[in-house]
Image (cartoon, rainbow, N blue to C red; front, side):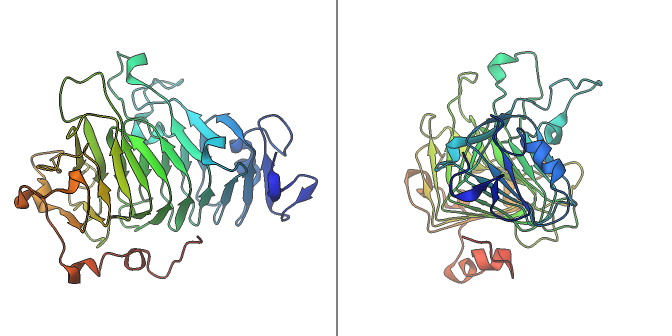
Length: 333
């Protein structure tokens, strides 16, 4: 089941562990393998299958790599269904961060060809008000995801850092992300390159907006937040029913200045071209934040109200590249 990545009988490296839900590996759950993989530089190879569990990688397990052994990220799925408002066994609720199916605190984490999902649905829980349901929360510096999928509805991908003073760099290459409300959010310095973002339809709302693709919460001193480049945004929803972004200034950091640059990206008709940005709080208008676009294409990128579409000059665009955001770190292809 592990393809070209070896097996427990023929390990790729001494630090490689094999996970298979059907018992043909070292462990049947991802969390059991993570717990056993102490130290730094360990590799987990995940056989195709559905791993229904929550997984947490603590800060001490640095330079860890997870490899999906299938040919497609759909082959290996890590999924659970906690939401922010889900009751905890010991009392209280999970909250947004606690709802995450997968949580990564360690630096140097890499994942390839894996689906991270949270399949909690509003329709199944009409009495729950905390509808945030995170597929993955990433806090480590030098975190890279290649050919991965992130599935959820509200707050799917939490690209964050471990503390306000930590500028965590993250890189997402050839990934797919879907959701509805703020489904890519947090304060990381994150580059999304050759990615596909898809906004979902909603039957619980009578009109627009259905949601927001990005909700960065970049710390004020951090010069760089989210960079989306050479990507595309499509939609299942009616035309114009989604905003491109809104700024998140959390109560824990009222000095945050959310930063988002979307460049060289195709914006589909699902994006409201007239007013692509909105406020999360009137106390922090989006116009006071660091939002900008450059050379985008598609019906959602059409400029009809220039005051609503802040754009970079060619000179400014030169400061918003993968290399500028990631510095001396070069994630593997």
